Length: 379
Image (tube, rainbow, N blue to C red; front, side, top):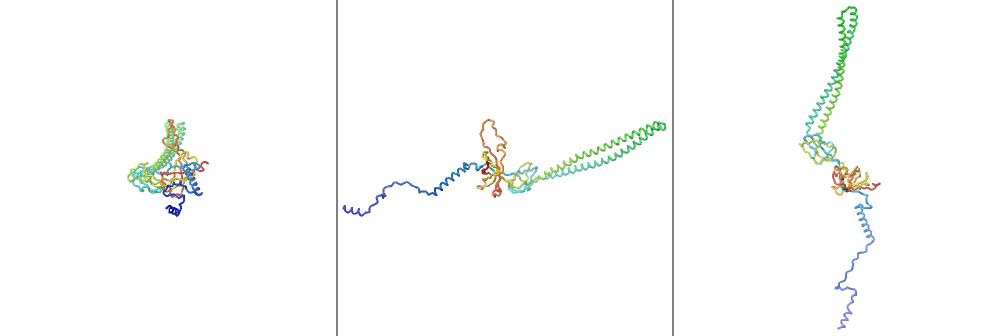
């Protein structure tokens, strides 16, 4: 029996000594990654460096500190024009629609002009009346001058009568001495002489009165000429009011929503609508510490919230002459002695570079995020 078992053992192959028994648990070994080659290590290092640089750039840390200054306190601005009437009356027509494109001089609204046409006619009649009075003054001057010529002739006649009376008086003096004429006749001759002298004085006084009449007409003409000019000024004012019954667009642009309709009664200063020209720019409010290296002409880029990721370019056109707090209606008061330092804002005007198609979609009031390249600004 033992011989058979030994033979079987000799016939079976011997198992390797290190082969594990499948029924016996073997302790697991630790995981080891594959060895990295040199290229993989370089790529990982490059990615790590770029990530660090991106973080430094995002947080404006050295070496990127001060290269760009940005803010989201910025808005698109434009010359928004308020359209208001200068005269009062009922609106008769509004030939434009909401948000329409208009040209300079285009009619936006009209006001009932019947009263203003009547005022123009009245002013024209007043001008004609004042011009007639001025012409009458000219004729009166000519009449007074002609009258002075007659007065001059009267003076000459009075002087001739005076000379005759003086000659008669000399003869009467001679004749009364030798008794050729009576004393009564001598007295009559003397009376005639005195009357001739009075006549000369009266004629001279009349001539002086005529001269003053001419001067009075001349002086009065200046007042009449002033009245004519005043009447013409009133006519111009009436014509201006008549012209202002037609409200026109002052510049090219786009209208806002129309705030007036036919039949509405408007007065001077009533806001009818707004006109927005296509000339726009950006006003960015930077902290005062951010403007240290800002200079006129530096390039800027900005993004508008309404247009998504569209980027625009521009340049600094000007900086405000004072902080925004200086233009506030109500100034801050520190009478209590408490002080909290608040970073002031300086407005920066940014002109939009031409040739950007998307700039046509910019509208005043849009929110903007601005970044300004300040490199070289500190020099």
